[in-house]
Length: 224
Image (cartoon, rainbow, N blue to C red; front, side):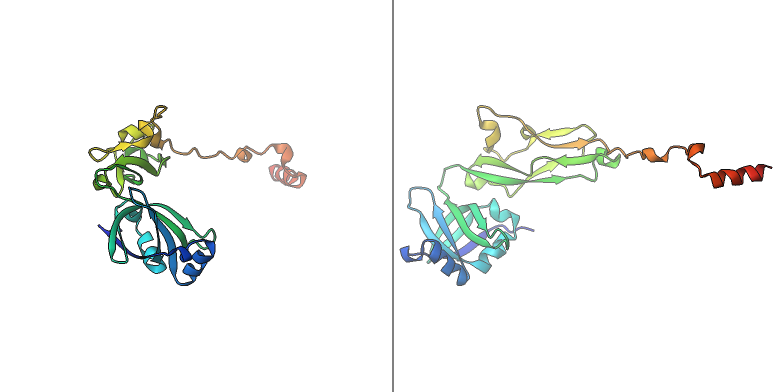
């Protein structure tokens, strides 16, 4: 499930509302401390309603789309760059947002979706589709950000694989991993042979010496 646009309402945090103690007080008020940074503007400390943020976090696209954050009536375009959750309960504790600057490229992690698994020839003969990478970092303009990248595996046979360089990207986008000096064209998914069934070595024929004497005697009596 996804939606085309995310809009979040927030309030500016004063200096008195910053720090560990202040953050705890905000959370007790059902608010999540956050920050917007980047561009030529100074970082802005904000607070977001917990239930509003939690609802947005239910959508995968929230992590790869441009968001509109309205702070006291002023709109800011940003993307989420980091989210801290409670280690045990999982609720959001702090969020970092990066401002969008017109004409400036950004780095974003984009999820991979694998389609056609059941139709793949390798799957039909018992092969195992092994996904080694679930998201990739791309560099592009904010307007080029995809919600996800789809990998069609419907034609994969046993032994086939897809590498980073096989991913179809939006025009103008590049893969960060392949743009480095020591770039490695990693495998992202492959089709493995069927798992071999283990043979139970304890099912060998029973030696006569292992048969209880009472049973051997019974057989002998029957022969007489």
